[in-house]
Amino acid sequence: MTAEARIRPARPDEAALLAALVGRAYAPWVPVIGRRPGPMDDDYAARIAAGEAHVLEDPDGALLGLVVIERHADHLMLDNIAVEPAQAGTGAGRRLMEFVEAEARRLGYAEVRLYTHALMARNIALYERGGFVVTDRRSEKGFDRVFMAKRLDGPGSAATAPR
Image 1 (cartoon, rainbow, N blue to C red):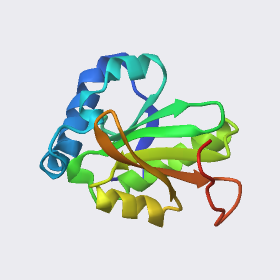
Image 2: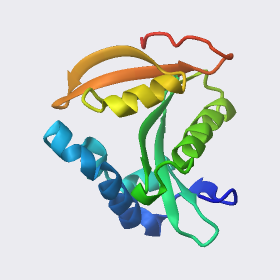
Image 3: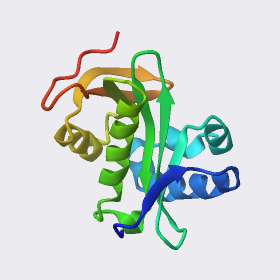
Image 4: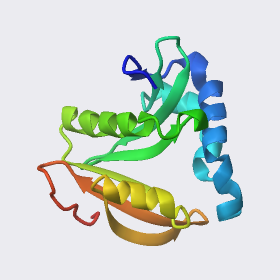
């Protein structure tokens, strides 16, 4: 990933590209959890229309990754983050996470929340290293999920449990 890569809102004509990128990014998790992760079946045209999908794009226009974020009354929800497999380890995911936190602050939120599948231990550890804490574990929509949150109102601040 180059330093010139930028994050921008996804465009309506990119819905199929986002779905394909998510498919490639999440494919390794299918055998781990025994089914397609939820983001693989999301409606990206609807996410784009709602202004919830943002892409990381290199200077040549190639999509390197994406995030889907949802505004809630008291937090910003990181619904999905996906990085093109060839971009793993390049800092693309970190750039997207930094964007999510900056966007939360810009919108006046003090907390970012997310959830992931309980069997995605590598992702859980990555989020914990980024300052997220586990707030709940429960089955939802047929998935065993781990819910996490990060407070943005100061360095090292602990997240609170969702209300």
